[in-house]
Amino acid sequence: MLMLQILFWASVAAVVYHHAVYPIALRLLARLRPGLPVPPVPDAGALPVVTLVIPAYQEAAFIALKLRDCARLAYPRDRLHVIVACDGCTDGTADLARAALALAECAGLSAEVRAFPVNRGKVAVLNEVIASIPGGIVALSDASATLSADALMRAAAHFSRPEVGVVAGTYALKEAGSAGEAGYWAYQTAIKADEAALSAPFGVHGAFYLFRRALWAPLPGDTINDDVVLPMAIVAGGARAIYDVKIIATEEERSRRGQEFRRRVRISSGNVQQAVRLWRLADPRRPGLAFVFLSGKALRALVPVLLVV
Image (cartoon, rainbow, N blue to C red; front, top):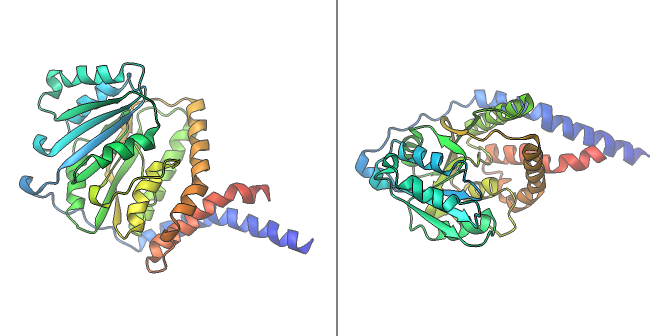
């Protein structure tokens, strides 16, 4: 009986710590650490080559808007290449993408459409496409997300620091499906900003982020939360991640309740997997990162079990 009581109260303490104490402690620590200033944007000749990959599955409703948005990004055309990676789409996404690229609005945009005949899943497509990119900076962006015009320029400024391996921006909803969803993303944005102050932003918003191609390694085929595992594997290798709240990806699609529920289930399923695969982040030589990983992510994977207890 005593052991059960100890287990119960330990579980309660862990849940309270994760949901209440950790965010407060994170905010206090973040206030003690002034953020790094954004470096100046490199001269045009020194800007890195960026390959922007758009993984697409049944994105007929958004792909033309996405490509027009890419064409308006403030970045030299000779330093930007866009790849639309259609993962076995059956709704005409590839044809609509090609038609959009023929529009005057997209004139001069270096882009290609890779239409894979069979739906294999996002991870398989990313592994194949990224492996074909020779170098420079790789950007991943959802088809339904539009970007702030200076997103690539701000990212290029951050990448002028050689220790930076990942750059991510904030996520905004054009139209929230519910007040709860809007509140959730506002909370996540605040947490990531505080984590970034400790040089430890954990995971990124999958709508848009960038990384050095030289630091990338293929993802295991069963990866669930690729937008956590991919960038944090780079960080685990010693690189730094930057979270810039002025780089904004706006979600154009209004989420429905069923979509939001499935997304939450998927994220929860991936929490345990990523905690196991990214254990190197609990490195005492990087105390800020270890604190965020253990308090915010590893413990999150245990919360469902602790609630049962």
